[in-house]
Length: 72
Image (cartoon, rainbow, N blue to C red; front, top):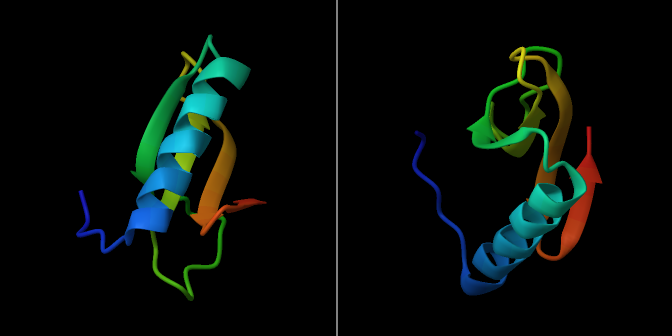
């Protein structure tokens, strides 16, 4: 897992988003620090969360930016 430098607001924001994703997608696995191949990695190759179905297909990828959720 990559090194993560997150302030308190970022940590709280990510915790809230992870809980929301678990509620929104109870049938899926929520993966932290995912490295998708189709997303431009200018800000770094890792994004905060990926929603993965049982058959290991990533259906959604999210990046959290201080209480702003960006869906890729």
